[in-house]
Length: 507
RNA sequence: GCCGCGUUGGUCAAGGGGUUAAGACGCCUCCCUUUCACGGAGGAAUCACGGGUUCGAAUCCCGUACGUGGUACCA
Image 1 (tube, chains in turn purple, green):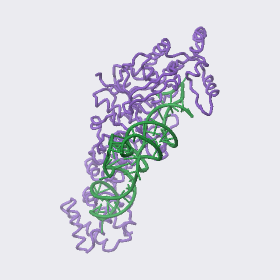
Image 2 (tube, rainbow, N blue to C red):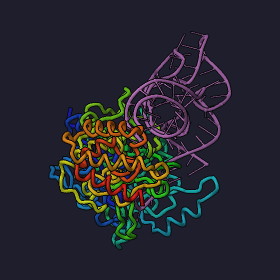
Image 3 (cartoon, chains in turn cyan, yellow):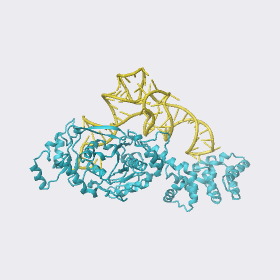
Image 4 (cartoon, rainbow, N blue to C red):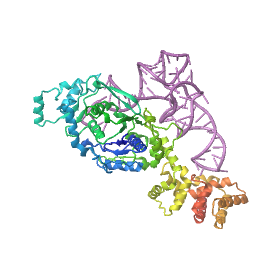
């Protein structure tokens, strides 16, 4: 069997959203599992939709997710170029070959002609008339015109497209790796444009030609492509490559709160839809990314992998390596899956807990930096992160959970203490600060024993003193166990915070 | 409208003729912890509907409804 080769073929028109990343992921997993190649091909045949920066952005997203292509415009391979715009000259010959063999034809209809045709044939029962076998005889094309007329138009450089000639009455089908047998009636499909007037191929021609030329063995794409599958099927056949056609799988859609997930949903419901922040260079509109929201790439990949796939066991947390060995296209769910941001957050929380803190120390350090807290002692940062990671769902949560280790709180939640504040308590804390100064064992048991002994001496329940101490050190009602905080804060800082807090509370 | 694909709890889902219909997220209760979490123990679903086939159907077949995608010289 020949080497597995799969491809992801985005058009560089904007951000890369969830569904796109999942398509990449399934391609990548399949390729790596079979020791095959993962190819990135840029489908930039629509020059009117070119967006500067979009291609670089796609590479950045793939890199962040840990899915490097084996071949791409940036990774050398023997099947380049990997941008369809740079392959432009290759497509025409295949389109012409189809015309010559009677499988396609020239069409000279202008935009206005097409509009007119749609307008005239539009009825309540048929709101969107197609350019198909019933209509083509009435249009301006090499099927309806005489050879002389066609030659005349051609010599006068009349713009034309090449359309596939769909058979009137055939049934064509294929076996989808996920869905099984799928059939279509060719008479119901329109004569899709294969080569545009500007000489660029449409997706339909380009995908077939390039998949063939690049020796793609398996083609995975979104379910939205299923309706045009008969066109591609016929093209493989008409071009004489039927035996080399890749195996296909059409991946289920990822849905938003209502309907297909769109970037608008993200803005509307407050969750990211793109892998990374994307700013549209034309409108300057920013669409939030999972990365910037504080997701770990491991979590992002994990949650995407199980949105539509599972291994049949109860396992939910998978590393990339596990996914590579366990993934199977046959176990991909057929139905679309609704994206649930709450569950997505759960995955991130789990990955924060299970990862070594070194995995995100740098990111947290940057987050703290932009919150005005500069960390110089990275060893301490790591200890802090280890201590607080159970309480952090998204990376930015670390800012609140760890700031007070590096910076004396600006504001104490005195309201949490004042109502129950007494002279006895003031007395206790004054004495505790004193005793800490001479404490030899600066560790959790030492701090706690000292605290409890003193509380017993003063005849106060230790429980009544814990919250005030927390407020003194943290500023609020949150954070890890209070003696663990004191331990990391160190003797001087702990004593200073207690004494300062007494003044604030008394005032 | 037509065509394709789909339909198991709010969500992700296992299960593919005989099960008390797994598990996870979220929600609720309790335990742990006199912070917040983590962790632990519980609670809540007759598998869209209607017909078949069968001794028996969430599982097979047909229909209906609903959802979703396509119906561009966009991908």
